[in-house]
Image (cartoon, rainbow, N blue to C red; front, side, top):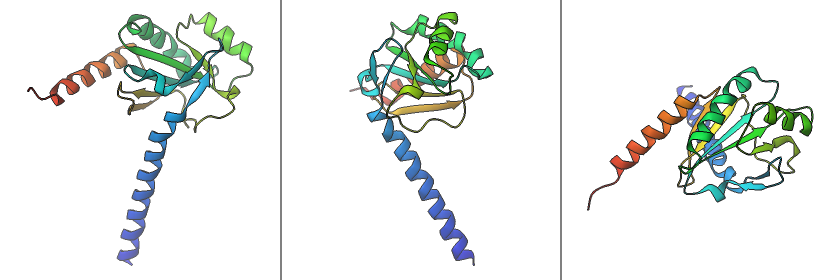
Length: 168
């Protein structure tokens, strides 16, 4: 009996690891178009921090975090940081464009529902994926983010990167 429980536990753990590895690999093929008609591919942002935020116009935490994301992008976009907002579950493209205009969103807004082929959307909104400049998924944050939280994350990552570099 115990043997079966351990076997099931190990199989479940292996399954979770497999799913996580798939989710980490899928974004490499991620290509979407923004409201201005420009294409964005995650690979094109290699060499800079990339913040991909999934949100919906009806989502109160999404609306609360939007000014924070805009302030973060406006302050850091010249420092090898990019923010992409992916709108999902919206009524119309016009409603997203109007929302982006009203909120003074300065980073590209992608119409997630209008894309022909996308990778699996997050189950919780908002969800933010942060990619390291080397292209790997660095952090996933479910729930609202703040400018301060993003800045601290990048500061901590930079400190960790400098500790990893060994002097010659």
